Length: 526
Image 1 (tube, helix red, strand yellow):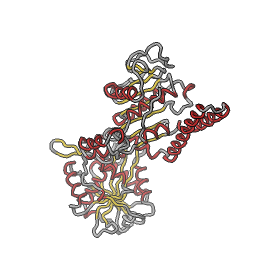
Image 2 (cartoon, one colour):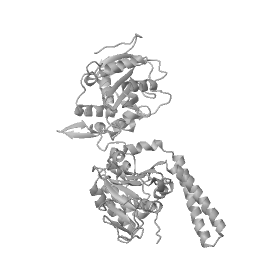
Image 3 (cartoon, one colour):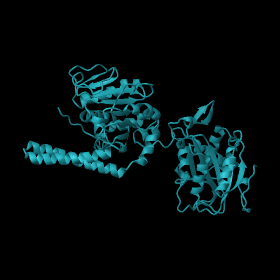
Image 4 (cartoon, helix red, strand yellow):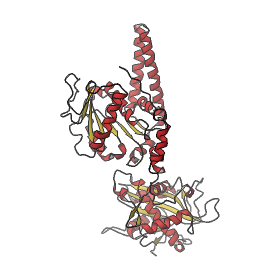
């Protein structure tokens, strides 16, 4: 029995593209569950008798929510009957087709009459995927799933039956589904820059053309066209599909559905209620409107707004008559460098603290690579003078090794910079810094703070994602993400720490920032 399912634009597109790796970052209510159900139906058709893994973070989420939603979709939308077309978490009837690789136990398996096994596993539980020899995987609520466990546990369970299914783009495929609110989806967002959107759109168009030809073929078969004509049409479709599958096997697609795409199905009231029920406008913007989670919901820098950002042409914010103010933050995962100037921006009447550039080096690269990146950002600059600000954390050293600030200064000199150092002593506690940054960023201090939107983007992103927490009545910067290996170091608070030093130097050590006259590098500690 065939059932017709009405698809949203993005639901249809992921089926047409059929990329081997597909990450769906969709708003709430945009049909993630039905898309998982349709993916299962497709896998059941092209890889019958295979094992498919369905994963999420916990067993409770899988058994309590996800499986119920999927089986409801299969029953209500696809017309399938439990105990006839599939069975849940028990040994299937003898008349069901047998999978090629029979699971040892069926207490976490949904079995289909065509032999497909949907094997459920929780990534927070060690050994959940032991014994599985699966040919594809689906993850729901990816934002709660540890990326490291996906690689170390789930993907290792995708194996076997290569001779049967290895030619298909579905073989060893990974499809994930999540909204963007809370959790960790940074690693997926980073994949967007690596995908070829033009190629993806072209595949969708070709796949749609193939579907039209299939429909035309069915009509001609019913109309009794000659066997030779039908054969040629089938061959044409098969060859086009084969060429498309070669591309799909290596394809990665990050699908981002537009909001309100499921309006006809959900109705306007769903979205009206969502605006009311979301605990904040941030949650609504991310979970319903599908905006990127660029900013913390409880920001440590609440006064950093678009008014603090600027764009200029030809480095017009770089004043050759003044030295660069430079600070750094050091961590085993990342070395961050922040550069600014106390100068007038174009069209401004008074000087401001302008963060004009920032860069970083990720482990295993270190200070040397970060300094090279910094130097490359200022290729062609005539004034090679730097005022380098450092605090008590930068003068620590291992036995037999220079301090972090000494290493940085030596490398800067090696690249042709002339350096004056300013000792900032110990920075204020986070609560004091929080109050100070509010003044700096709102323009109520002696200088206004601005950021180059293009060249200081790492600093902006780090500051916007920095979260404020309250402890013992004081505001602190939440730095727990710094030690989480599953969160990219460049998006955590490291760059913001370098900026805190820059601001502290500019506002509290203003009289030590002049550096002119001698062409010889000046080293000293004030």
